[in-house]
Image (tube, rainbow, N blue to C red; front, side, top):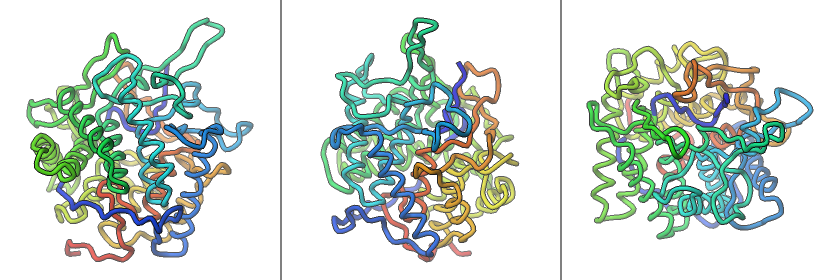
Length: 443
């Protein structure tokens, strides 16, 4: 069955150490951090409001307890392209990790903790395994069952339960983002359980996805049904920057007993460094299926931006990658997913805004205005202004071709990235980027 997992790149490729973030002030509760321009401030307010509304809708009357949020919901079910059936009620782990971190940025620590608690419970109560993994998606809503509920639906015509192979799989980057959420929560309100489970997720990555064939790094994860999962042997620039930042943060938080995480961070960061092409001033997306041959043809926007956002004080040479993004990913007033894109990718455009704030001190008002224009009636933001845009990537090894698309549906992940960018909160560091702050890199 075809699925469009718009929340996370499965088949494409995904730093330097940063200081621990300062604890979040309780005085900011329920208030977004104050960014720069008036347009940016209003966008921060509205995107935070949209995330809180999603929490209210999906909690189904349960005002407390672990909660996953639906990744997609139609602004008006009577209009627009109907959701692909596999996406109805699906809560992608990456989107929820982003939403939890964004809710922290919005000052709503209580809601962020509910998502973090859902991640921990999903790790502890997987329906079929006990190795501490998280799946790519869960069923949206309060976690009321003994085991974590995976997405799916009953097909009365076929008289069988229909599930999706990607959703029940485990992609490496999604595991890293789940750990990143727990570390952000631990920074806001220290909890030994959050730190311990973040380290457990990093341990799973080390044990199950480390691929030492050169270039040494971490592969894409595991795909398929539980009785027939197979390793995704490509390596991703995006995934490895996720691991590098998360492992370095966990090592700092754990103190002297974190040699494994420190080495993990070094391994992942070295992979990312190897993917930088100084002659073209851009990052390669990662490797091909053999895990060794570098993929030089395609480009993913997030693979270009995340190393710059993750460590603004890191390699100054990487800042020149913004020129590559401008020349190869620009689409109208925004940015597209792939090289020479066929439309604007809202989530990626928000990532570009966040990166510009981190590296340049601000983003143009035209970028904030474009993002603001994508607000749907339900408070979330559309994944794209177009009816459909392509990524040039496949959902998984079962795909016959490049079947990974984004549609004009209100999207939790896009909304979370907008909130992070507009509030100036860096999910990789747990810090707010001061508006107008001077970059440590010369211009």
